[in-house]
Length: 334
Image (tube, rainbow, N blue to C red):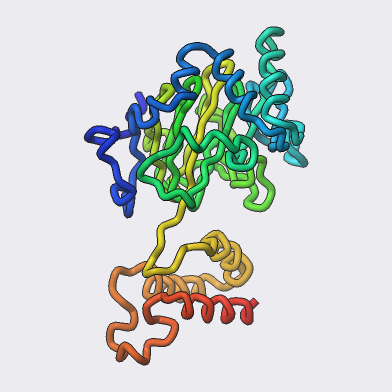
């Protein structure tokens, strides 16, 4: 039996954003947004929930995936990995909700997923009544809405709090080191924008993915009800299954301000540049570079502690001015 994701200890009202600074494991936060008006409507009925979203919708097109019957609602690749198993459309939230209602009436097994819709752009009146009080206002919420769809295991490089507002969602999470057992697809060609696992969690005996069983030994799982939330640290793999005919989730992504400098640059660029510059090196060179990277980036000791503070150059405190200098140096290297 899979282990449960740990729950936040203490009342949800006592949480601050500092509780997540450096938190290295996922946490379930029961009832974090149970008092949101939209959650109360969802508890009343799917119809009441959908009607209120339609009233708030201003018609802005949002990214919508249509998954044909026979795919089990799984967002993924087609059979030969030449494309994806869905059609991509840009429609309004109201149109998406109308399609979901049609699927429900027809008992269709087709999947529909509205993904990462910026709420301030499509539901301008939503934020006034629905916010997470401990998150600063510049952290913009996004809406994920659909029927019984499954997003395979993937990771984000941001801190993430995801709040279930309608239906139920099952989260299965894996620590970052399980990347070696998850059979990740192409980094630059992924159905969700983020690279995904190609192994289905409900098919652990698939002979193409023999190491998946090892990954599942390290997995944790939780089902979230309307009003519940989950915190997911950066680079933790998470597989998300929507369990009802109508499901909705609001999430918040952010990066902390480090040493006074907003973390606006993507660490994913570091990975891509590493593929470009190091993949072709000899094993001895790779080993040597691993020592350098450990020393300058990953070890806890300060690599410039022996250098006078005013002579540390790009190894000094990361001020906005130094961040810009580093950016220009990287651009020159490219």
